[in-house]
Image 1: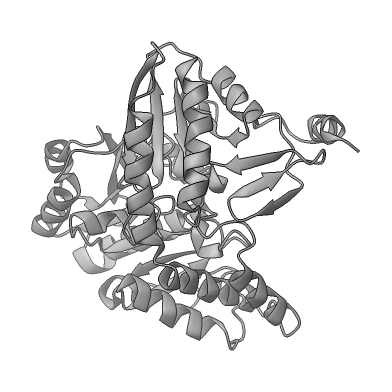
Image 2 (image 1 turned 135 degrees about the vertical axis):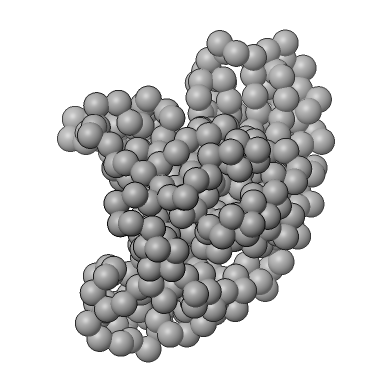
Length: 399
C-alpha cells in the first residue's frame, strides 16, 4: 500500500474530526520521520510536544521492552512495583509533595478542576455547587465537556450544550482582569503559561508572577496547565520557572509519556491533594506499571541530556533566523525555547504554506488560519536545526 491508500482508508472508515497534512508516517527516529515511499521529513510538531525526547528514544524504548515482559496493568485495586518509584521521581523533578497519575492530558485538567472544587468546599467553606474557576479566553485545555465549556473557540464548543457551569472567562495576559473577577465563590485561577493552540501566545512579562501573588492574597488556588509547555519545551523545566510563579496545582502530560504511551498527572502539596480520599477519584489505567516505567525513563532523559538548556539555546537560534523571513505576509515569530509560531497577516491562509513545507521535508501544522507552530523534538542537533532552518526560511520567503 502507498500513502494515498492509507489516507483513503482513514477517510473512509474514520470520523472526519481532523484535517491532517496529507502525509503518512510509517517510520520515525529522533527528530525525523519517513513515509511509506521512503521520503524523509523533519518533525516540527512533535505530536504537540509529546515527543520532547524524540521518536523512539533508546533509553525509553529499553524501559518499555524490560517492563512489557514483566507486568503491564494491575488497576489501582492493587499496588505495583513501578508506581511508587515513578511518583517519587515525578515529585522530585517537579518539586511537589504528591502526584496523582492519570492518562490523557485532559484527564489531568479534569482532576485539577475536581481538586479545586472539592478544596473550595472543604477548605474554604464555599457551598457545593457555587464554586467558580477563572480561566482565560483563547485557552485550550482539551476536548471533554468541562474543557470545551471553558473554551472561547466555537470549533471546540458549538452544539455541545448544555455546558458545564462554574467557569468565568477573562482576557489572557491581563492580571487585573483576573483580580477583578475574583469573588466569594472563586476557588481557583486556571491558565496555560503560554497558549499553545491559540498560536503560541506568550503573555506579558510578569503575568504569571502577578497571578501567583493575586491568588495568594485572595486565598485561592493557582493552577497551571503545563501539558504542552512543560518538561523542558520552553527552555526551562516548566514555563513558570521563568518567573518563579509556582502554582498550587500543575497539570502535566504529553512528554511525560516519552512519545510512547499516554501518561498524565497533577502534582500538588498535601494541603491540596488531601481532598482526595478512597473512592473520590480514580482511573483504571492511571499509574499502570508500563506507563510508570516509561515515565521514569522519560524524566531521566530530560535530566541526563539537559534538554531544558538545549531547548533554550536552539530556540534563540530558531527565532534569530526566522525573524528575517522576507515574505510580505510575514508579521512575527514568537515563542520560548523550542515552542514557537510564525504569524502571518490577518486573513492569510497558512495551510498551503504547510503543504509547501511538507514538500521541502518539514512537517508543521497551522493553527487559527494564519499561524504555523514549529516545535521540533528537543533532541534535535545544531546541524539538524540549521538544515531544517534553511528549508523553512526558503519556504517562508516565498509564502
